[in-house]
Length: 373
Image 1 (cartoon, rainbow, N blue to C red):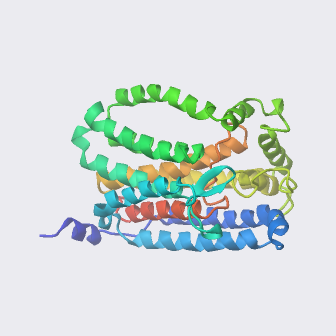
Image 2 (image 1 turned 120 degrees about the vertical axis):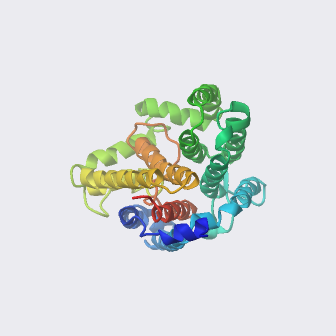
Image 3 (image 1 turned 90 degrees about the vertical axis):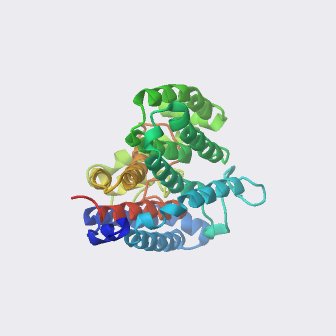
């Protein structure tokens, strides 16, 4: 009698190449834009224009290698290890908060490691949290109708994870984790009335998270009216809008953006979409939006055609994580959402975020090999 693993291997097909090439195209655009957006800062701080480009290429190579490995390494093979993997993720979130161990940059303690070899445990937690939720909720489907015994434990776990991330502090990553988790919880089939009740009860906590810190309060108010404080909290949004407006239909050309010359803060990370809009214009921004829509389409298609409940929840959660971050980042840059500090997946400069996004896509691509097409 064939085992479940043997049965799956027998019907394993090709990965979703449309999703694969959409992600690789985003990565290619990202490499070009990171080089263009960072060259000024690279020359000033390191004496040559290639410093940030080289580090981004190294992280991209690691990420692509991880994606290719996970694309061929069946997700069910490491499912028994998910509780341990989740525990490691929580432990890293605790370790990074210990003075003397976690690195402090810009008044935030988010990094472990040494200089360019450092990584953010919160980025790892994005994926481990969704792995745990998908695995556990698939196993305990019969108990999800109960608020206390079903949904309650997951809310406690999610509160612990997001709470540790907020202590760094990193509101943007906490929002991204909560968003991806919300999709997994919704798809799992919990009582929607319970979700509404939890959502309503979460509003005071969200308000506190936004207004507890002075810099967060200023950022939120700047989103409502950036010109009320054009030289302070509203500076980033105003400069981003200038960049997007300057780009026009086809942009000023790669390398010719003016806002990256120390007018726009974080031009190669959180606000790289503004530089892309200035240099590639409406055409370039539309292309990036279309590629993320392709990622959403193929990722959710994989979730709907997944061979079992676990892989369905996991593919839906990981896809939503990528798309959710992209939507928030673009919303922030265009002045449609408050500034949250979420990078644009596969486009923004960043090591651990880039690698973990590739890890997420690699898992979805593996599930797509068994999709019931």
